[in-house]
Image (cartoon, rainbow, N blue to C red; front, side):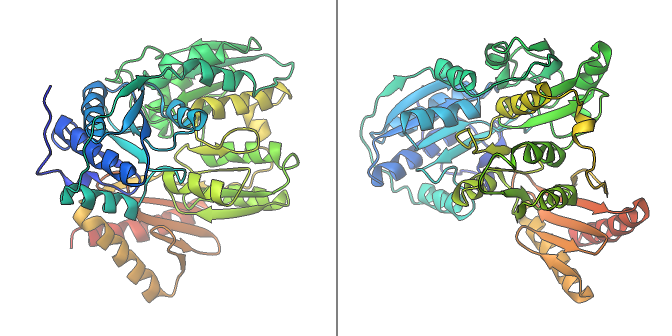
Length: 461
């Protein structure tokens, strides 16, 4: 198939953490080819000759993948082609092969009609923020180099399985577990990994790879997507339920009673387990995480570092600050105590199961003593990309005028003695996102009403 440079490439697909948009109206094969030309040219100018490329199981991914590879190859860069794989498998291939330039074709947890590209030029990891906007300018400038690269096929599957096999040491308690890959890309690998550990009695649902995601949206950190998992856990009296997103880098957890466990509470369980096993007792969370997490870290004698939201940012921060563990509310968590630091939903799930095999406690019991707050889910308000940042600026002006204490590391997080409110522009779609937390339901409603009305008013100006 012949591809051509995309003259009218959509600028809105170049977002805060990656390139992402609707297929084929915003991202098509010529877009992928053009991105390949620019990516290959960029890393070749850096003196590199090789990159890794993989794709998830979305219906549009194989054709976008082929077009991307054609563009990269046209610049004289050689490509290690991983084919169909999860994003964590792609990350591990880059580590294993010591090839830190690469592209993963995926739209992560977005709807089935979306697709996109996570990309890295070097060891710094996935591009973000200004790097992505600078990359867009390189595309527009058409300052490409040309040559003739070649494609080398490589299957990372066995190496990835070995990484898991050598990492875990389970206790004596057997567990009944329901696992829901949501028909996402983890469907191709989950059984090969989880069945390694006979202490686990696993029942799988929605475990056939299908990029149409026919059973539910592939975002395990939105509770409504876990109704099937909850039902199956309760039906068979399982100890716990695990779910993963479309490309496999995020985890969702359901207790044996069918109760959704937000990622920040999952992170409490992990910190309680590892804090006395690591030298550096500092742990990272993002601005969306509950105060329950920071409270618990401090009670344990550790330090909590609050950072901006975004997988590309939080993962880099955990690495650059040399922290043993960190994560964000969206389901990305990063282990560096005995794991290479990249986010893997399958790995994160097994770490919880490993802890449970050494105790007779269920998940609720593992969370006993956590300070409780009333909080909302992450709320979304549609707002065009051209307007959403202005809305956040308006919220900041309002907060300053009121004399409220706030953080502006990522949007505006307003800090009260008994509550907090967070308003930020989404970096993955045309939305304003908000989250609220308070010590009482009445106070939660009060701050929620105040800021939602403000968002709605600013969004219509």
